[in-house]
Amino acid sequence: NNILASLSIGKGNDIDFNIVSSVYGKADNSIVSWITKGKALYVDKEKALNYLRISAPLAEAQDNQELSLATNIIKNFENPTLPSEENIRFRENGNELDAVNRRFNEKLESLNADNAQSTILNLGNPGTLLLSSGIADKPIKLYGNKLLKKMRKHGFSIADVQDLPRKINTPIAVFQGSVDNSFAILTELKIHD
Image (cartoon, rainbow, N blue to C red; front, side, top):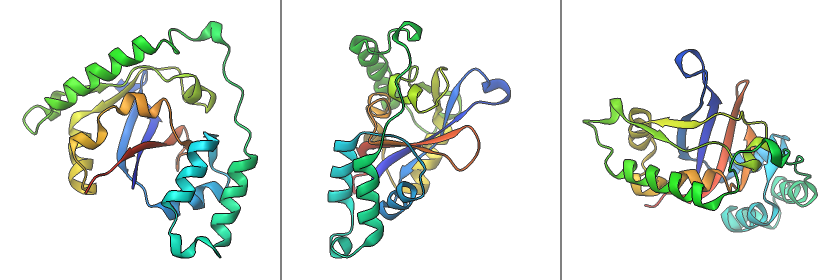
């Protein structure tokens, strides 16, 4: 399963942040359903079509109407207009994203049960693709204790979420979340068995 990051606009003490509220592997049939229900906000067509081709249950692929519908939706999907470049601070500067990604991975490697409660992983600000999907222009953070809880619940390892800042900024797709001001970001990261 590909890793999905759920993101919501912070509340209370987190009002100035986007919070990664969950990280988990998402079943392929759920993604197909989200596409056919019109929940997609942004789609990288090449990555999404490849995802559908590779991840879809091959036995059902020939006669699965829902998969065929999802494929057609992706082929015809029109992404939102990207925000004006003048309002975006360093978004496309690969060096900045590289630095954020490196710091995230370093902090991730030191994450353990003893320090999880006090660890906050910073994922930088949303890039243009995330902004065009409606994600607020606020720093993104992930609480260490939440990540460890999701790892235990969903059976993935710290190594599976390395490079998360880079991967959420180059997603396969971004979907509307199940509650207001929430989003689900389908990444190319995979849960390894």
